[in-house]
Length: 343
Image: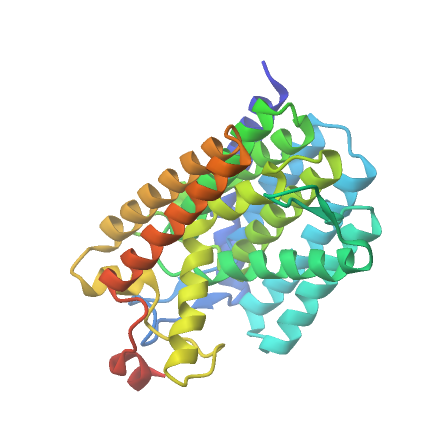
């Protein structure tokens, strides 16, 4: 049996059986997600479920692979981002404090040699970053950490999208013989999927910032590790496309808020999942549709890893065009008075 299959199975089992225990801990600790105008649920639900995802991931990694210096850096950084999420789920820390914790966690893998040292130029040789490597790596990790965090708005959405993204990277890593990346993404997919059994609508527990930030952080960190191990286009492009749904949703939110004169970091009800609910879809229907979109993007990412640069650029342009017109059709670029009135 392939090692990544073992990692996936261990992570899934640990996360699945640990989640009810974590739920009890969250209730006792008072880590409850109260409903408000922006949220869909109507009753308080325990959060901090990301602790089960973390346990599944870490135990699977420890049991199935040699812990190199680079992997140790990711695990240490992941533990720090988990701690930030736990504190936020329990005490609701300020945005500045949370950002400081994210930057600290992003710096840790760099100390262990995990950083983006080059970018692929579609029209020529690789671009080496030199002194820009560290700030760009921090920006990448912090951005993806927050991107997954922002999409965590419906039962099972962030867990499912992260599972699809991790499986996408896993499949490409197996094709390219990146076995370290394959094992790590298999463990991440397994832990997210194990938790999803308890988180799908109607959710018994939320992952909270503990889980959404950890998943985003690890997806970002593992992809950076891919750039350390290989000078391949897939290292950063594949996760960007695989996580295209939350990335585009975040980008459209920034455009929407800026164009209508609202603070960029002020929450609203204009995200894709809000619009789908406004169109009459149920939570399950909206989530399943977003899974389908993520799956299509995952297949596109796999295709990107197999075609030449020219076809790759054309495919990305096609995806961006479809995303833009789809966003206009659904209305995620429009302002919403109802959203403002709730804030």
